[in-house]
Amino acid sequence: MHTSSRRCFRHFSVRIAVLLALLGFAVTSWRRAEAQQEPPYFVTYSSVMEEPGNLEIENQNISAAPKNARAFFAPTVEFEYGITAWWTAEAYVQGQATQFDSSMFTGFRFESRFRPLPHEYWINPVIYVEYEDVNAGDKSFLEVTGNTSIATLAVPNALLRKEVERSLEEKLILSSNVKGWNLSENFISEKALNESEAWEFGYALAASRPLSLKGSAKECTFCRQNFAAGVEFFGGLGTSDSFGISRTEQYLAPTIALNTPRGLTYKFSPEFGLNDNSVGVLWRFGVSYEIQQFRDWFRRTK
Amino acid sequence: MKGRMVVLAALLGAWVVCFAAADGSWLKKVPQADRTRVNPFAGKPDAVAAGENLFRNNCAKCHGANAEGKGSRPSLKSERLAAATDGEIAWLIKNGQMYKGMPSWGGLPEQERWQIVTYLRSLNPPAEGGQK
Image (cartoon, rainbow over all chains, first blue to last red; front, top):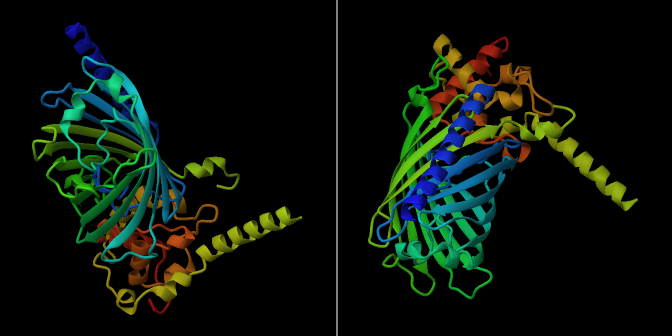
């Protein structure tokens, strides 16, 4: 029984990986689209917005084998669209597969990010508002808020899928670009709308830099300017009833990204748990593709 | 009747926004210190080539592969750009004109932004009598 479940889980993961690789190859061979200025973060947001009219499709996946719980694989697909230069909207759909258990759709999210100031400053604020409709089986780790623990990862999916939380999440994103470095800080608050729970808080901090600050005179895919490396530090800050980090998950994550000149971005990050409440290592990888001027598809004059 | 007026007003608003996007009003906002900044790559052929690559990667989707403009998004081969200083162009790339559709490119490293300026300058040689 266990052997067949393990085989099933492996097959599922392998199929997803092969599908992504094929998709990546197909898109890479398709046509020239382009790179971007986005930092290599998975959890932290910077002040970089989606360019107006562009649609970015991202698949990011997380996998882990937590102590005393079953291994899992959780894919998330994001659709990010630049409505204006100061307003970006995004929709997420997500799911997960747990070893020796089952796979399931865990929910969806809609969010908008607004840049309230018209120019570039030392610190650029962005306001983030998100509506979530996800069940307790969500293992996407798109953010960590409140008091959480890896013990919940041991609960069977059949129980987790029954508990659906609809919540509103707000973030204050602060981001600076200094001498090629991007420094970003996110302060997160979340309130369940369908349950009388306390406000939950969290944070994410990150720094990154391209490996080269100058563009190359030759077109290239693997030259240094197309790589960016950085580090993320994120976790919960408790709730309005019990503020603090003693019962929260905390992670430190080196991260690397390759922005290819064909509009594809690959990201990878091992995320290390820093306390007993956290998963030992979360393996995260993602691939995204930007459809340039998607809105022109619906315009007569291009 | 009321509905038609609303549609008309919306169309007029959209036209004004599109027209304003290319009106050069941004030039008045550039601080003097930025206006007079010197391009460290000025005239370097390598920087023109690098700037062209960066332009194709980041700007061509809106401004056209040869900077000729696309729809309401302005051409970057213009008398206005020829008359602008390198510092003014660099300021516009960094800050954008967010309420008129041009995003901020402050996330690109400064040297890459100067390389793009160098490429744009090669398309828009300074007006007679040099830059203002």
